[in-house]
Structures are given as C-alpha cells and as structure tokens.
Image (cartoon, rainbow, N blue to C red; front, side, top):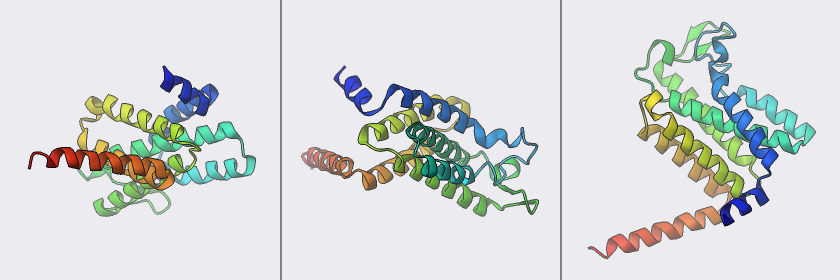
Length: 197
C-alpha cells in the first residue's frame, strides 16, 4: 500500500489515464499503414518520425498532460518495433518499405531501421520521465506487454532481453540512483554466488 501512495504522489491519476490511452494508440499506430493504403512496414509508420511532430508540439506548448501522452506513445512504439525486430523470416512483410522511392529495404537495412526506431522511441519515452517512479511505471507497462503478447507473437526471450537492455541502460544513464541500485544488487549476487566456489 505504501508503494501505491508513493506512486500516486509522483504520477498523477490523469497522467496514468493519458499515458495509457497514448500507449494503446501507439501500439496500433505502426500498423495503420494498412488503413492508409500503404505497403506494410513502410518507413512512415515504422520509424520515430511521428515523434518529431509530438516532441515539437510538447516543447512549444509545455503541456504536462501531453508529456504523459508522449511517454506512453513512445513506449508503445519502442515495444512494437522490438517485436518487429524478430519476425519468423526476413522477407516480404517483414521488410521496411520506402514509400517515396517505392522500394523495399534488404533484410540488413530493415533490421537497422527497426533497431534505430526502437532505440530512439525508448530514448524519448525515458527522456520525458521526470522521476524514477514514472520510469518504473513505463518499465512495468513494457514488461506486462511483453509477457501478455508472448503467445500472440510466439516469442519471449529476445524481445524481453532487448526491452530490458534498452530500458536499464537508458534508465541508468538518466537516473544515477537506479545505476547504483543495479550495481549494489549485482555485487550482492556476485558475493552470494562466489560463496560456493
């Protein structure tokens, strides 16, 4: 109960609602290419280009609720791109399409675009958090999403590892106390394991 009180002291309820709505919108956005009659996995919807518009709007308006929107939407894009980085095979619908040139990227370039898009989206999500509790909130949403979508996506370990790596590295860069906690936890585990050797 103490955690819930601390959570809502740092993350307002309206922020949770706005970020959740943005999160659900962001999870679906990359696949709107079908609705826009574009080739699947085109560069317009499978890149962080939309975030440039959102960031500009936030920086000009300074609207605190839009910051929560930006966090939720960016997190969702990062998760979507992470899942897209691990298709069943690198051909056809798995490849990134360049709309303006009407060309299809090769598997290597498609992987690079998806990795870049996932990292940039994760950076934006973490960068717009203002405290560690908001960061934990995004991390929990991400973990729940990956675990929930495991059966549908038929993959767990690679997306989970990618997400945890991105989030812990970015979080440790932004929040020094997270880095120190991870470091002390690692030292503790090392000491416990070394007792057996």
